[in-house]
Each structure stands twice: as structure tokens, then as C-alpha cells.
Length: 94
Image (cartoon, rainbow, N blue to C red; front, side):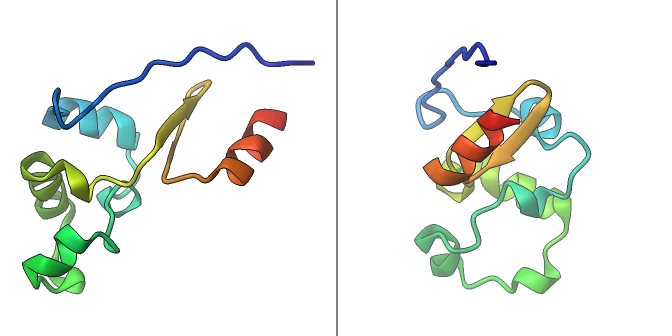
């Protein structure tokens, strides 16, 4: 059975996420799930990952969208951050 796929693109550099939207996407997961620690933007900040709390990570993502793991994919009610095409194909099978 094929799933119906609806694609909603958003350039969050032009239309940044709000704190409320980030919290909704996280669905009570830790902010680290959405945060790109491997981003050159994060590395350039020189911050210690271990000392950052969820609020700190969200504040950083609000200031610098490059710190958000991309792509963000929502399938049914589940949100996935930074999935590659192979993982997305597996998700779509279920």
C-alpha cells in the first residue's frame, strides 16, 4: 500500500522558526535531536556541547538557522531530523 505524500517546503532562512514551532517539532524530544553539532556554524562558536541545555540549543537555533539539522521530515505524526534518502525510503515503507 502506497502512502499519500504531501510535501510542504519551507525556507527557514527566509521564514525562521519560532520557539513554539521548534517545541512542536521536537515533540518533547531533547533539543539535541534537532541541533546540528557538526555544523561549521556550531564549531565556529567554540561552545562546549556538554554544557548546553535544551533552552540554550533552542536559543542558538533561533539565532542561527544553520544549526538546525536538515532536512526535517514529518511522516504522519512523527518528525525526523537530518534523515538521508535511504532512511527516508525505509520510513516511508512502514
